[in-house]
Amino acid sequence: RVHCCNGWLVTPAEHSPLTGSEVLHMSRSLTDSGGWFAGVLMFGLAPDILTAFEDDAQAGPGDFVDMRLVDGPVLAERFGAARGPLASYRAPPRFETAQGVRLEPGSAFRDDMPRYVAWRKHAFVPIMTIAAISAKDALAEDEAEVQVYYAVALLATVLLLAICATGLLLGARLSLRHAAEDEVRKVYRSAT
Image 1 (cartoon, rainbow, N blue to C red):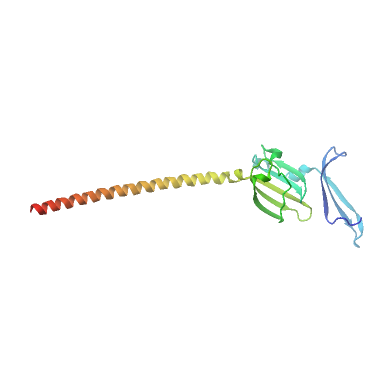
Image 2 (image 1 turned 90 degrees about the vertical axis):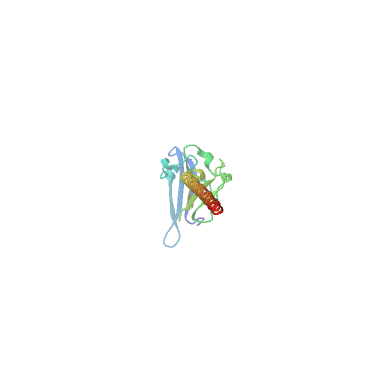
């Protein structure tokens, strides 16, 4: 009524006696055409709905998805198979831009595992989504490819060394043969 807040307000999950479970409350002040208070739009939803889109089959043991208030607490979380809450941030993260990706150091997380983090802030509601994948998992496929490249490079190097060694041996044999032929010519000339 006193125009305390513009836009949506979101509160962290609270126990609802009506449903008997955790509920997030979202509300917004409504105004009439003259700009006067005309009511409040308010609804509640289960926190699990915010992370229902996340595919568990794709989640690695160090991965997680957070829905949190911008500059505030977690509203809903979903973790990979093994780490659980140990994978989450030690302190609420700060993101200056509306969206982006960055590598966070292990010291930012409770399990000390570095992660690639992508975030996106909602345009109208003061919430953001954070998706994190452990650096080890993110680079696992590339690591296997790098190992293949190293093996091919090693094989090519060995092959080139073998070709060079063969060339040197053939060159040395040819030099010895030429030297022997020259010696025979010198002896023949001396004899004649």
